[in-house]
Length: 87
Image 1 (cartoon, rainbow, N blue to C red):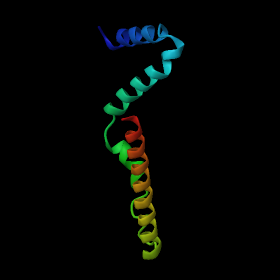
Image 2 (image 1 turned 135 degrees about the horizontal axis):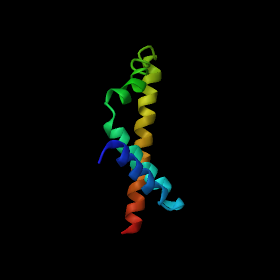
Image 3 (image 1 turned 90 degrees about the vertical axis):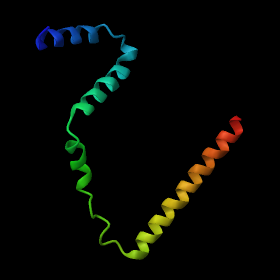
Image 4 (image 1 turned 180 degrees about the horizontal axis):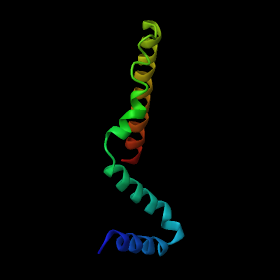
């Protein structure tokens, strides 16, 4: 089967998918596409933030790290509480 025929078959199958399942199908197709892209296409948008905290004052950076640590502890504690209640 050549590529053109294969694409036609795929489109035919997509047309037969119920409307309420289309979002699920889109997620599957999207994940296939992402896995076939080179990793560098995902890195580029992230790299524009590289070094953005370099000029942040130490005091502000320390407060930021402390805030993250507290939020993580709080989130983990809430998760533990939920899991304990389920047991």
